[in-house]
Amino acid sequence: MKKETKTTTKKPTEKKPAAKKPAAAKKPAAAKKPTDAKKPVAAKKPVTAKKPETAKKPATVKKPAAEKKPEVSVSGSSLNGLSFCFTGELTSMKRKQAEEQVKALGATVKAAVTKGVTYLVTNNTESGSSKNKKAIELGIQVIDEQKFLDLLK
Image 1 (cartoon, rainbow, N blue to C red):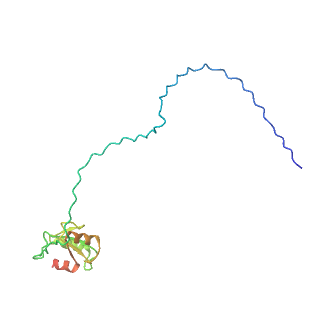
Image 2 (cartoon, rainbow, N blue to C red):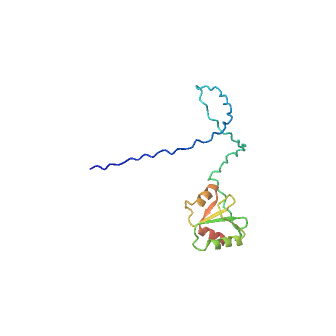
Image 3 (tube, one colour):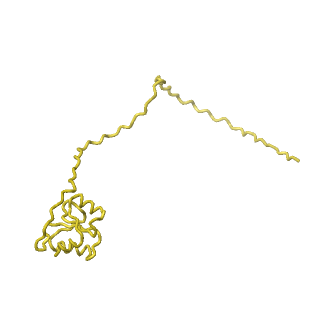
């Protein structure tokens, strides 16, 4: 057996006609310019302010690594005018102690390898550390801990 379903239709509700408003004055349509359909319109690029040109620095020429500083002789255990940079772990003393001894004898201590460093003190002179590489590049003497201790005597 099939069930019969009744479809109900809703009666549209009657609306009262709205009061007519006076028609607003229409503006005349703007005259359109004739366009040429054959030419595509290119998008305009935004205008950006130009950066002022700066003078370029000339490239620096590095000195060859073969030029090494002459070995500085230390007379009377005075290290005046010398500067040291330490890298790696020292076995006979802490780095802080080594720095204090160097300063007490008149030398300066640098944290980084620069042109002004006289000696780079390391636990391994053959190390591939960045300080060792830079010292070799700048012609700075790389000494081990034993040579450093000899300088202090």
